[in-house]
Each structure stands twice: as structure tokens, then as C-alpha cells.
Length: 123
Image (cartoon, rainbow, N blue to C red; front, side, top):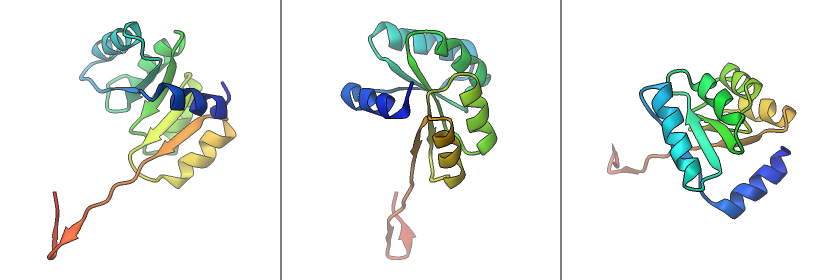
């Protein structure tokens, strides 16, 4: 699916199930439960053991499956290779943007900030 269309559908849906679990089986069960509940966008984080296998399995379903917590170009390339339709990173990883755009995959870079007050980082 074209990344522009995917982003448009995501905007209309406004809901992504972010799946983090201790096992691939738990991740699949959580993703299937979310899908049964009507959620069409599922993000599998790379913190899930066997995340690529989970993404591959879910990409065969009528879902929009993405890879989350992507920090390295190799992770993005592998996720795209097994069917990920979008990539999410917790920080701005500039090298991921080009990889995603070349593959016509949506890329959602994150950012993290900390407010500093009186010389200390605020929680």
C-alpha cells in the first residue's frame, strides 16, 4: 500500500495498537484480540522476541502492520522485507527516513525531550 494512502487511513482511524510482550505467541494473541476488536493498525515493537516473525504472520491478515522501536537501518530493512507497512522509531533516526521512503513505507520518527528546571531534569 502506498504510504500516503496508509497515512490517510491511519488519520481516519486514529488508533494503533502497540504490542509489547515477552513472547511472540503473546504478541500474536494480543494482535489478534485487537484485530477482533476492530483495530486495523498494529505496531509490533522490536522488544518482542521474534518480532519479525510476528510481523510476517500478521502481514498476511487484513491488517496494517508496522514495526516499532526501530533504531537501526537493518531493523527497518528486515521489517519491510517481511511485510511491515510502517516504521516507528522512538527518536529521530534520519537514516531510517530514506530507507522507508525508498520502499514507499510510512515512517514515524519520534522525539524525546526533558524539561530542565533549576539544573535538574524534570520527571
